[in-house]
Length: 422
Image (cartoon, rainbow, N blue to C red):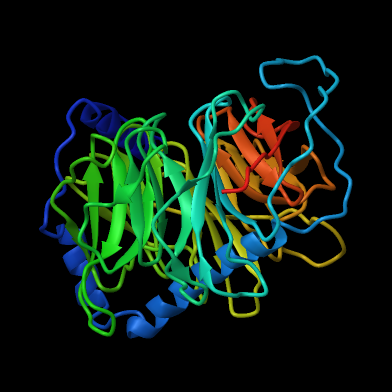
């Protein structure tokens, strides 16, 4: 196992210096996989089910994001404080226009971040708008809202749901059927220059940006595509066609040129910017929900599986998927085993993972063997985003921003979200 781990690390480190474009040919290992499995996984119905699951999950976040009426406490050290506990500074209460729902957040450092929100809230009446606000001082002040795209019908499930920035200037807002890009920090937005009918994910930071898309008309069948950009989405590589049995439902970028892709079945991984790909056999049994994956280096892989009874099982691989070991999940409350309703799995560094069950954060520093509460146990986080091994943000259900500078062990309430009326 150690020899394989060292060999993989050596290959990975040698390939960081040269980034090559995605190739359109499939690797031998994928051809073998297609021979073993000559029929797609449930055809387009399973793919559609996965898409629906992603959209529903996003709408759930949007729904609870504007719930009111609970106090917030248990604050950790200020970002930048290494050990001593310090009092949290007075934080300006959030100011959110009526009928506004928060969809997503992202950041590139503890000072610079963005929030995506919408006017599409219950009861649905008329058209919906999607906008982004930005901060460059850790949430002390926020920009005026900038609308992304035009009007959307309230029943349009393909509307924007995610915001992701590569650096301080280049960022993306996307949903199932629409994607927009900015190259000036979010002051202006344009349609993404990729021909696609469906956008599965856009990910990556400080290096390669990855986009997984479906190019064919709805109701038709063709391979998904994964392509990369080394200039923040200005130009894109040639697409790599994904085998029909491996629709790319989640992508996690790591290091300068690595990407691991999760599906309903097996995983895919590249260490060299998409020049070559390898299929990893999943530890999950037949899944009814997209697998959640996490990695910080492409060698240690975390995999959260959900079955038809909504039971969740966690697996960890220390050798890039050559073998898997099951890990016990923490119990947030009560006698029931598992982590029912887990909404986030992150791995900021080797040996460490964060789970966001919706209330409180669980952290493990020993590869998932043991877990402990981290940060505010009585606060409901709708989203957690890390921009490095140490730094990250979370937004709670009262529109407060929380920050961590130690990989999620401690969280400090640092800002109340301020959104001016458009």
